[in-house]
Structure formats: C-alpha cells, structure tokens
Image (cartoon, rainbow over all chains, first blue to last red):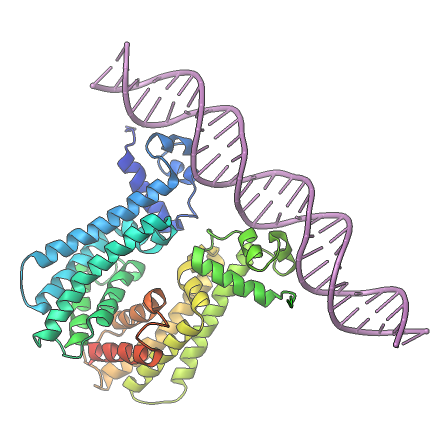
Length: 191
Length: 191
DNA sequence: GGTGGACAAACAAACGTTCGTTTGTTTAGA
DNA sequence: TCTAAACAAACGAACGTTTGTTTGTCCACC
C-alpha cells in the first residue's frame, strides 16, 4: 500500500466531506483526522484552527459559483439563453462539488460574523447576475412584464440550491435531463 | 416581575428556537437552560435527553405539514385549486412555525437512524399529496401532459421549503403576496 | 542537514448527564 | 381553614468523556 503524505488541500477536501455530512459542529478534529488516517492534533501542521477549515471550504464554494456566473454571462445572448447558461453552470457546480456546495449552503452560518458577512456579499453578488437577466428579459418582453426580478430570482435559485438535497446521480434522471427540466420549469414560470 | 415555572412545552419551544438558530450540535443543554433562565441540569426534570428534544421538535414539524396537507386536500377541486391550497397551507405552516420548520428541515438528519427513518417516511407521504395533484392535473389536461409529477413536485417543494431561508415578514412582500407569487410561478411552470 | 508532516502526551474548557437536595405549589384530611 | 403529605421544578456539585488546541519530539525526504 502506497501512503502519500497529506497536503493542506487534502485536509480541506476531507473537511468539506465531513462538514457536509455531519455539519460543522457535528465534526470533531479527531473525526477529521481519522478520515485522513491521522491524529486530530496532526491537522494543526496544515491548518491554524477548525474555523479556518470552514472558511476555506465555504470560500471555495463562493469562488466556484462566482466563476460559474462569470463564465455564463461573458458572452451575450437572449435573456432566455443567458438564464439557461446560468442554470446549467449552477447545476454543474453543485454536482461536481457536492460536499463543498452542501457546506457552503448549510454551514456558512456557523462562521464568525466577519466571514459570514463576506459570504452574504458573495451570495448577493451571485444573485445579482440572475436578477439582471430576469430584469432584461422582463424589459425586452421575452419574459412576462410582471416578472419581479427580485422574487423570481429567489424562486429559481431555490430550485437550484435544492438540487444538492435530492438529486441522485445514479438515478433515472441524468444530468442533461436535470438541467433541461429545471430550465424548462423556470422559463415557463417566467414567460 | 411575574416568573412562571416552565413546562415541557416551554423547553421544547426554546429548543426549537435554538436548534433553528445554531443547529442541534451548536446548542448545548446549558445554552438551552440559559434561554429559559435555568441551569442546564434542570432541563432533565422535563426531558430525558437532548436527543429527545430534537425528536419532539422535528416530530411537531412533521405533524404540522401532515395536518396542512390533509386540510388542503379534503375538499375536492381542480388540480390548480388543490395545488394552490397545498401551497397556501405550506407557506402558512412555515411562517407560523419558523423555528420548528427550520429545525425540521435542517436538523432532522442529526436524529438517530430510527427516528430519521420515520421523518423520511413522513416527508415522502407529504410529498405524495403534491404528486397526486400534479398527476391528476397532467392526466386531465389542466396541466401540461409532459409534466413529470415526481420531478415537478420536487421543484415546487424546493421553492416552498426555501421560504424559511429568505422571507422577511416585515419586508415589502406581505404574506398573501408571497403565496400568490409562489402559486403563480408554480402554476405557470406546470401549464 | 534542514524542513515539514506526523506523533503522543497533555491542557483547560465544555460537553451531556446523574445525583441528592431544596424549593415552591397542589392536594387531602382533620 | 389549617396542616401535612405529595409532587414537580429547579438547584448545584460532580461524573466521565470529548472538545479544540499546544507542545516537544521524532522521522523521512529534499
């Protein structure tokens, strides 16, 4: 058996896994050590504190969503096309990084107020990408005029963020089918 | 100052509040005691264990949703009417019992496997009420034929369950406006 | 031969819970 | 109506364990 030494990245990845599964407060440093074949105390060779790990995992979640929104909106297209791109990007981030996303969505509130504040700002910024598209679609008539960008963005993001909670990657619904089901549902809700 | 003695109900209610705010593992029995002006140890006059409190709170959440679905579907009506009634009921349960609902939605996974199993069953049963209505609507043509009751039910419930996370009862959107916004979004997504 | 990863022991604090006791409030009988 | 028994709620100390973290030492690899 080939045993490689662990890097900080390994520790953060394992933390994401356990925080997603058991929650931040439900995971001890010894649990986390065991996950990596280490003692709990050995983690402090890689990390300054437990809180530090949460900051890293949640920060990476924020970064992923941010990058996805930037990618989806850098080219131009109709409101429907842009929304479809945002939705596809979001689903891909969720499914390619389930543990990080679960931790980002459910455990960010365990951060100290300073870091929590930053996460809220990142979320607001991400939300704005959706809101702008809905706004544009309502203005140019490709969506219903009565679409309320603020509220309807929340509805779309509600569906997207819930994916982590129920989607089974080995179930009947494959990834493209999931993306198009959500896209269709959202677009019909808006047009 | 009139100081009344605490009942088991008071303890469960306070537990719901703190579990919702800080999570189950983020709440200690001493925290909970402080919330009620008691010592942590005094709680054991009312309750057998901390786990017991979570069982009670989550159980009440399950009961509330179940009762709401029963109420909404006991009279008959069109699929759209029934869905609207289910949606209104759900929103009312969420807004009238935020702490219980938050704990039900976010902390049920901290239950031991036996109780967790029961919660999953209760959720499945509740979900079926929605699914039956979507099925009926797709069958009688009041919804689109291509509506997939399973997936689309999840989408509607995603929007409903997220309400707890963002809705501000003192914000611009009042309760009837919230209900009709969700109902409209859902019905458009399905028709 | 220095550096960084891991160990092992130890720390104080906090954890859930138990225990025997005290307190305050009902209840029943005289 | 007064009293005494019964009861439930709360206390406060203590329990054994687990928590996050610190420290000093060792070993393997550049």
